[in-house]
View 1 (tube, one colour):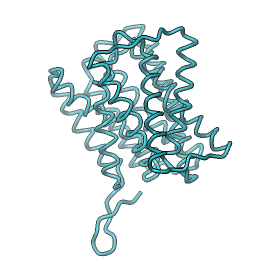
View 2 (view 1 turned 180 degrees about the vertical axis):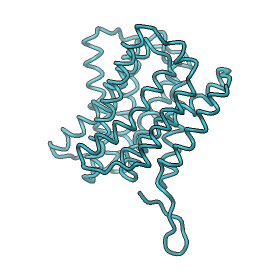
View 3 (view 1 turned 135 degrees about the horizontal axis):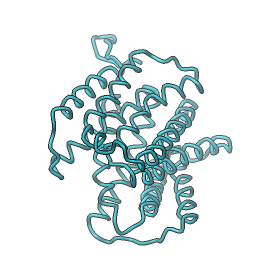
Length: 301
């Protein structure tokens, strides 16, 4: 599967999960909805591994690393985002989460000694600027609100944990661990950690049987978790954590496109400018096409 297909798959799936998450809110406590999501994704991943006869055995050391990835990337960071979203608009959450690109650049340098490419720094900065322009009205409306600082701290904490989860994923993929194996066990460990959070917080186990809730839950579990994380980890293996994280700045643009169709979102001049900046940064972030033997295009970087 080419880099472009992996990249587009991650952006399109996670760009549409924003709307699906909105359909989850209401009757069921957010942490319980998240628990249903990761538990169902775990079942799907283990079934897929069994059907495809993917190896499921891991050494105890690799189990520890996969558990770390699962807790950081599949569960705790999502929980903090849910908490932060109580104080922030979705636009502000999107702007803050784009810092994942910068954090991945720094952490990949610290933990793996990977060089920081100036081109990627420029692309990451352009991405943050583009998302800020997309959600400029929401940012201005939130100025001076004391609760914004609390929400921002939670979302930035989630972003930092997600970056550490990316580093664990980079370690696991660089050691040749199969993506399906890592995702299945990682999602399982993530389910356990979310269940612990639900128990500690005393969340009530309710369920909403409406089509909108069940349908969005299935989409989030199967596409948004089981499939998308598989594509994302494959992307990390192919182009590195910094470039893979750039999906986080293009995803809000897809989410706004969905909102335009389903929720009547109206585009403004700053929003259009932000989208153009995002696309420019995206072109910088992705690996450059190079000509291989026989004139066929290959990807490098």
